Length: 108
Image (cartoon, rainbow, N blue to C red):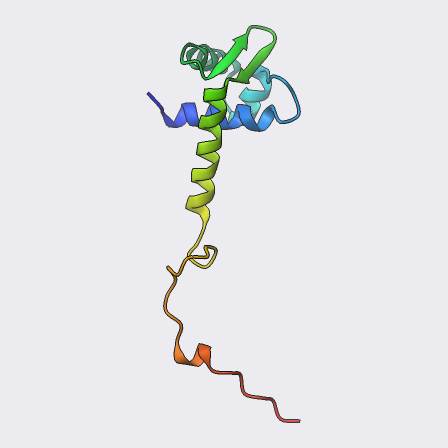
């Protein structure tokens, strides 16, 4: 079962392990603004789901399945932040005639 909390943890672990092999509970607690004890409980749950490898006092690292989940969450967030003008598909409003006409030259 994938919840918002699971997605949040996967994304946070992904972000925090870009420069390290594993992330500790304190860093995750700070990033997610939750108590360290809550982080420990969720890490155990994520490990049981095979989304992370967690070793007490050594931290957590994403498994391949966890990494795929985190990347998908990040892509979904990026897609949802796009506006029609950001995308290259013709989903924006149709151009008006005035938009297609050249601008009038300014007098000298």
